[in-house]
Every structure is written in C-alpha cells, then in structure tokens.
Length: 360
Image (cartoon, rainbow, N blue to C red; front, side, top):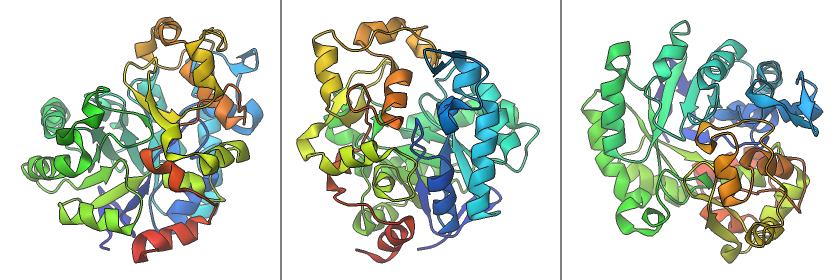
C-alpha cells in the first residue's frame, strides 16, 4: 500500500479511522491509530462529556448546557494533548460535522488544539476555508456523496483560492448519518463501488485531489477493490470499535459484539437524514412513545431547530448518543455500519492495522 499525501501531511498507511461520536474516537483510539501509521481522527462531538464533564462550565440534568459546553474547547484541547502523548507528532485529524451549531468556532478550536487535518461531513462545507485562514498547514478534507457535490464545493471554494486537500467519498453502508435518502441507500447506483470512478474522474479535473473511499469497508479485499477503482485511501469507522483502545464504553463494545446482521437498521434522525445503528430497547420506546422526553439541553445541530425535529422523530440525538457513550443500554443510541455484526471479539489497533494492510 502506497502512503497517502493529504496536503502537507504524509499518512504512512492509507487508512483513515473515521471520526465517531459521542466519545467513540477520542484520544486513545485516534492516538493509537496515528501511532500505528494510519490517520487517527478525533471526533469533536460531545466533548463536554470527556472525563465526566470536568471541562464544562454549566450542566443541566448532568448534560452539557448549550453548544459552548457540548462542544467544549477545553476538552477538545485536552483530548488532543492526550492523543499526542500516544502518537507524538504523527498526523492527527479532527472530524467536525457541518450541521452543528458553532461550526466555525469548533474548526478554529481544533486548529488551535493541534489538528493537522480537518474532516467535515453532514452537509456540504461550502465555507470551510474561511475558518482555517490563520492555519495554512491544516489540510481540509470534505466528505461528499457524489461527483456533483465535489463540483459544487470546488466552485464555492474558488473565492478562498483553495481546493480540498483530499475528499472522502462515503457510500450508504456506513454507520451513523447517511448523505442519502432512505430509498437511495438501497439503490444500486448509489452504492460505493458505483460512485468511486465518477468522483475520481471529477477530482482529476482539479489536479491531484486524492479520493478516499468510505462506507462498508471491512477488510483488505474491500480496500484492494477501492484502490482498483481509483481511490487513494480508505476510511473505516465501525471496525475500529472492536479494538481495546477504542474510547467507547464496554457496554457499547459488547452491544456490537452481540449484534446480529438483522439488528443493524436504518432509522430516522432529527438531523433529517437516515442513520444506521443497532436496534435496541430504545427503538421500541420511540415506537410506543415512551422514550426519554426531548428537552434540548445541548442545542447540538442546527437542522434539529432547537428540538423541533427531535420531538418529531421521538428522540434527542445528543442525549441518546451520549447515553451510549456512558454505557446506558436502555436509552443509548448505538451507531454501527452494515458490517458491525462481523465484530466477534476485541483486538488491538496494531493487530487490526496489520490485518488491513496484509490480509486476515
């Protein structure tokens, strides 16, 4: 496998660990992946919960109050500091959702905390370069779901005189939120293997923008297939949950180890797009109207409209993902990609990276 150049940063093994929040990819997982030669990616979501919320100024019902605390600057700084203790000066990324309230502020926080690469999905980040003007060495990597999305983005970034340093193309088999409608997730033309070539062709028009394939990638065979289609790298999220170093709770890891293929479903989300996760007691509660009441303490994402969409679908995304991080099996929302059921035991990041590079 050839190393992957993203802006000024060389990733020794072209494998990116997808950012997973709340609290799935923080210092331990991201730091270890970078140490082992991949790109570890810290999730910026819900950092107010880090180390029992010790970096938040204000909580209500034990939850970080408003976006200032939910996306805690101090906690993010601490997570980077602790990840650096593991990986030294190797490249380290940060995933920041475009749909969050306070996007620009969190991007600056990540740059100040020492992120080398910023990855953004959950919407097309048309003004991403605006927030990194003072950090010219930070590479920018948007997530797209089509060649058209890349074309629009490049056009919008012209005024900043900036091109993406790489682009992640995410297909509809990933865990968490999808960049597709419910119906598209099952249609042949939207499957990852049919999207890679058009996006690679589009990227070539602007020079040498590497395309990183993501969504449903499990092993070396999948990786080789993506390279054959023209991708320069891959991103995996779910498989890294099955590692000792993953920051997720033991309850989360056991949940994914026990999951069967049919337990992993697409569900509605307050963000407005479908999300993939494990069917648990929570789904039953949502269906019969007994899920925890939506109170919108953290004001996490703008499409939710201060809890309006959450009430419409029956749950608060911030609270339920945070409960999964805290190990609450009753009320937690446990995101997983399509292949999550294949995790049957925990292994080390080192062993997983070895399997991905050299085969099982």
